Image (cartoon, rainbow, N blue to C red; front, side, top):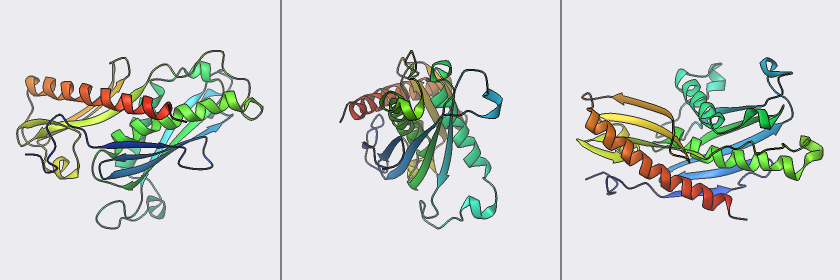
Length: 244
């Protein structure tokens, strides 16, 4: 029995609230069970130095956890003067995942920065950030069509090539399970994050055996669970983006 009472292949309840922030070009409040985070996408008509003059854009991400997003207060990384290794690794994952579905040439010399701020953590924050970050990204890019005076001539082709979403899977008490919350993640024998496109292709797999080494049959079972869960997350994205 899972601590939450969910079936092994059952996602936590997910809710994506579009246009949650007034000022950002794209924004979404992501609620996955007890995990809450805000993703905002900011669109700018400039690119990093290494891309100037190359007629292509850039998509990047930043990630952070608020001091009381967990059970005890953590100090702000800005107060410590630098980001931790975990933070850097997560925001690079988010950036890679979103760039995987964007035609940077079609984007032109524009940059989208997706900021993912964890308000409350109960496992799966990085995967929730990717799933919600995609929605914020799509809304930000739609601003080019709506406001060409501010963002320049619209692209001749859609910069979005596919959907992308992510979910965690793992082995908990010998059982492959989908969408680990903190109680499971902290005790799981294996923990894996899976990022997939809407076409069923893998963008990234991050898996670690914490207890015993996992077997190929267990890996196949986890990937099957991930594919099922991500299909449901892709549906949630489509419903959210289809809303007014």
